[in-house]
Image 1: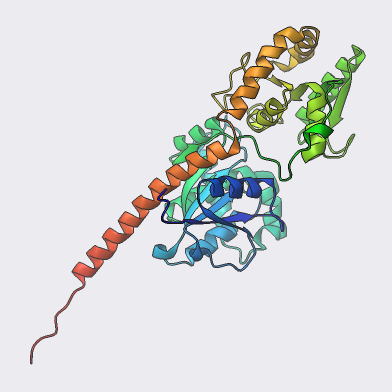
Image 2 (image 1 turned 90 degrees about the vertical axis):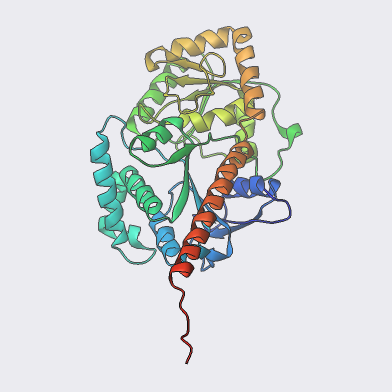
Length: 374
């Protein structure tokens, strides 16, 4: 980026207060020299004041942003970047069916009025069951109409999935988030007294069943386990979460669905705290992560045996833990992906500006007229 020209980026967050993602986006962008402003998506801000608009994950009514962007003159619209962190529909479904349902659901949402569309009973019911299809339709509409200019997926599998349906989606891995408040290293535990830790939400019956089964078997073998699921243990964040990860010899990753991308965002956090990540077999959502090198992988039926093996052989776990720590701190930070995304965005913005200027020149040259002399 030209250091003499300060680009302005408006980050829209879905909660009334900026969350960890908004904080890290602002941090990464400011390190690159951008001027940032984090704004609640319902705030009546003038989006055209920014050079770039940055949204992430459709945790809120994305169509509301699409509608606002459509009301801005094309030559004044910010370059809209969206970083998706949501799962796709079941990858086994026919692409044609997914596209059709996605377009239909997205169109239904556009027919509603105002920002409260997704709260109407019928729309709420559809969104709760078919929200993954809506993402496909929403992205397609916003891209085709020149409103959303860059869509990025944190899963290579999902990015390829969208590309196979004709949507120009890029891939940038999810990286290690910086904590919103500095960690007190002296206050963190030094001893790893938890054999196996699991942090997350149960989400599906599949994951819940596997979690209970595996942890019960490990407990029966005399291993100390800890489940942080919002039920047995309240959610933990920041220093409390870091403390648990520092105490865990192994942190378990289980998938809500067979194709889920949970490993892609769980691994950086686990690796950064030097806990061994043991995961059930996962699709290559982040191809840079290799089982056996950066984490341990096994089918669900072998997870208990695999965990017990590495607990009994810490000398085999140690090199995997160190390789993972090196990888996450040297290239897998959140800021690394933000830098890549903004390189694409700058290139895209220059192309858009060139097209707009060319169209304006053509229009002016074909609509000139002379005043006849009397």
